[in-house]
Length: 447
Image 1: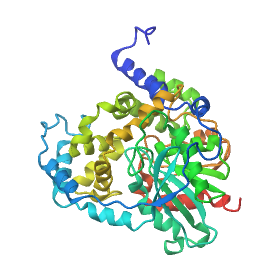
Image 2 (image 1 turned 180 degrees about the vertical axis):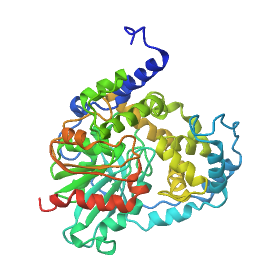
Image 3 (image 1 turned 90 degrees about the horizontal axis):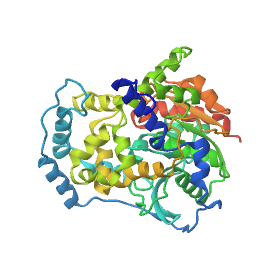
Image 4 (image 1 turned 30 degrees about the horizontal axis):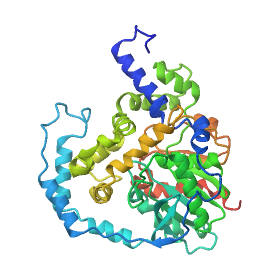
């Protein structure tokens, strides 16, 4: 950039954002960086120091913690209203005040707690860290095991709606041949999993831990699914190719070709792009220029986010301001709309972060991965050689074009460009997600 003094301010800022994404904020240059991150890890199937005990887990929030939450909501010190009629300055104050009012008066965490308590939950130690997971087995004999990984600002709450139709398909429009055994772990530092106390819990290490978990559960063959960090972990698993992994499915695919990644840095859109590719370009360009605030802070200074551990309204606002489409959906929900997510859905997730005090520990995944990165972008092609299926939702950070997906995944199992849905696919569009996952892995069930 020092060699380009002719750049005007707008172009300079755009180039800076894109360069940051492709560099230290790229988190993972998987075509090169996975090997680097994995060198420090054992090649044995279970990570070192594993304890094989699997312990039942239950959680009940104390009355004191819930009363403290309500007290803090009432005591919120509000800033002045934004100057603009939209969300270009951040989450609108009316949204946050509506959220705080509902959270402090009508919302009932105990309902979510009861839903969680009805599911088989466990803790097991892998590589020195307690890993929490939900494990629901199907009654159908030939069910296919799947490990589904959430991202940020998500949690296991994202996947609760899909567990029953995946494990019990005959009651939800499917056949016994569509059944899955479902494993949903909490990422390290998230939810009920342990909080790392030292660097090193990046996606390469998590991927190995997930493979160890599936082996520990007795699964000799299985598939993986994820979006956001869940996609990163699933794609690293695909690169590591642990014994038994048949293929992966992603709802936030990493398919950006190298020439497109380079062009995004300069801001010069190639003239040869198709309509779908131009739409993806526009989405990526917008995200790189205007959507990276949260990721920059968590990648560089996660410890500075003390306010998120002290203010529930601050935590909720930080989590809502993730991507523009999801934020606008949530704004509409708290304006009284009904689409995709409900007020309770949103607050179940935020309250889980609050009660487990995981705002900062979850943010450290960004910092940890940035330290291990060798460059490259989060959406760059990674060189996966096992079967991959792609769910391309229109309101994801970018909707991966089929042309890019075919270049990124030589063994593309299936691609579907969907008409509705965004970043939190299983949460927002559970019926679509379930039907897609059934179709994604149909051809692998006899493998």
